[in-house]
Image (tube, rainbow, N blue to C red; front, side, top):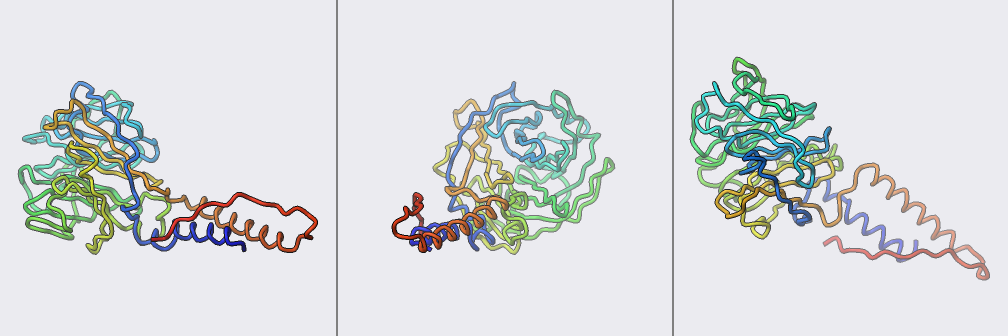
Length: 339
């Protein structure tokens, strides 16, 4: 191969090599979008959790005063909403802090203080009476734990398991199964890690997201990793299920608003929501993080490798052309260091 061809091959290996198999590497991400979320008469205020719906190509978010759930585009445009009726739940604050999407319009929302998760079907323009919905407890203790309870929940569609995080006193990362029932449901979730004042180098937990939805990570160790958001530390971290911190993203320069929710789509794009309360801003916001060099989808990776083979063949063919014949040339591409 020519020197330019070798450089191009090296660049591909750097971008899509072995490191992508064990970590999503948050150090390769940068802010790519910043969008205002409509207030919607209060439904869009104090955004505290967000989840991606792959079969709809949209996002859902809730506010921590619990008025309802809002569906938005990937750039923050409101597409619809559904109100929550908390009557009969016994909730003292209607504190919706955790949200995850199960598929086929089914969502799970978590009330922070009693740490109860409710499963419901989304209907745009409708109202859901949560007391009548299947539910299950996600906490390690029963009863109201105050304003330091469950802040996030994430569903792993590969095996139907859930992961949740408790905010503080103590911080907890929990995982396991949930069976939802209108009579109360059951939980096999256990506390995987706990810290009195800090854990994984951060001082609070605000949300959690599994990396299993990312297509480029399917079948790799990285698909088992978790994203954990910390409001107090203003940091997003990637951890393994054994508790090893692999990478992190500093959120302190993104906004002065409180970022409380995180989710990810099949392309590896990360979405964050920030509430408006206490910041002087009239609106919650959606922030988007993308890799500097996007993670390839599996079929794209195969095409790139096939393309390298064609380039190599052309380079070898060029060597045997008679000098009198013009050689086929192509523009070279720059290469980045694997660094």
